[in-house]
Amino acid sequence: MPRDPEPDWILEQRRIIGDRVRAHRIHANLTQERLRDLSGVERLTIQRIESGATGARIGWLLRIAKAMDIHIRDLLDG
Image 1 (tube, one colour):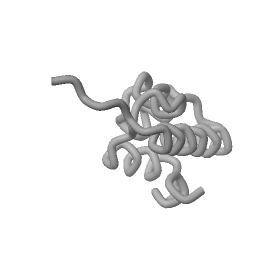
Image 2 (cartoon, rainbow, N blue to C red):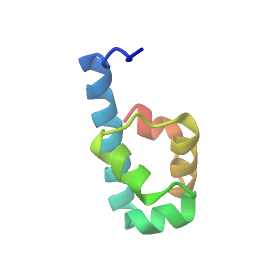
Image 3 (spheres, rainbow, N blue to C red):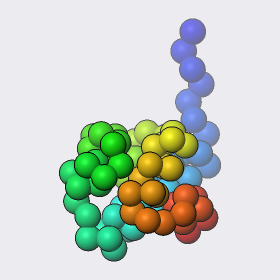
């Protein structure tokens, strides 16, 4: 049984969170590869999160936030 497509508001929030991940990564002067090394989250997954192509699992966001020495709320609240 196919899943229903995500509503537009969820897709928009995914893009916003991805933009925040990218902004914090760039501010921390990290490449996606270095963030992968620090967080343990695959580079392709980081790329997909930043582009909004995938919804980020809470565990991924926790690892990414810790690697950048920020709180997860910085990724969720802006």
